[in-house]
Structures are given as structure tokens and as C-alpha cells.
Image (cartoon, rainbow, N blue to C red; front, top):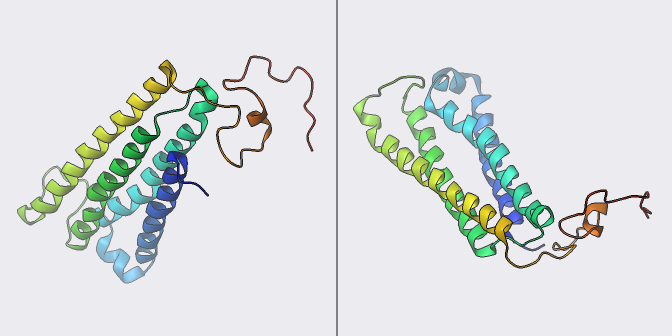
Length: 182
């Protein structure tokens, strides 16, 4: 197993999705659930499951398929920076929300009590950082589309399915005749 950017995002997805799963187990305990329902604890759990469950997997897929789509390799250094900044700022944004919820901060309120200000400021800084980190992804995609190192037909170890037998990017009408599948 190698740890290029697609694998980093796949492993990162498993990590944050697991945290979301464990916080869901806490919500399955009825006395605790009664206390944290409609608090920021639920917001944190929800985002660990759904945001991580979608975005990190989408990024893994996008980085995996970019060489096949464009015919060029993406900038690996930029991709790794994107991963690490996304992982750090995602956790800086949503992990403190567990503590806010346990302290009783309700969700769906336009203003909050002053005792929640520090963790909310930390979450806000994390959210801005996470948003800015996504600009690295946009820049990396633009850079990849515009050129760079040519991608081979099979840039990944273990890519053994039919699409990886074609050149990158694949030509139109790729399989005029049915391919032989072994």
C-alpha cells in the first residue's frame, strides 16, 4: 500500500468517519441522548459522519481519477498539503463542538451565551481554514487540467480493471469491439 493523495484521503475518511460513528454510539445511550439532543454535540456528530463521509471520499476519488480524466498527473505535494490542511482544519472546526454540546450549547440559535465564545471562535477559525484549504484543491485541478507530467495508462499500483488498459485520457469510442476479460 502506498500513501499518495488518494489513499491519504481514503484513510482520512475512515478516521473521521469512525469518530462520527463513536459519537453516534454515545447518542444511542438514551439518558445521554436526552441531554444532548438539539445541542452542538449532535451538530459535531452529524458533520463527522456526513461531511467526512462525502467530502473526503469525493476528494479521494477525484485525486484517483484526475490522471485518467486529464492525461496529466496532479501535483502530489499540493495534494498532500490539501489533505493535511483539510484534516487539521476539519477537526479544529468540528471537534470542539462536542464539548460545546456537552456544555449545553443549543443548536439553531442566532446568538449564544458568552461561556461558549472561546470554542466557537476556535471552530470559526477552523472553518475558515478548511474553506481556504479547498482552494488548494481547485488550484491543483486547474494546474492538472492545464498540463504537467504525462500520466501513464496505469499510474496506480493495483489498477487492474478495464479502464486502466486504455491511454490517459481515454479516446472517444474506447472499445469498438468488446474487450477480452480474463
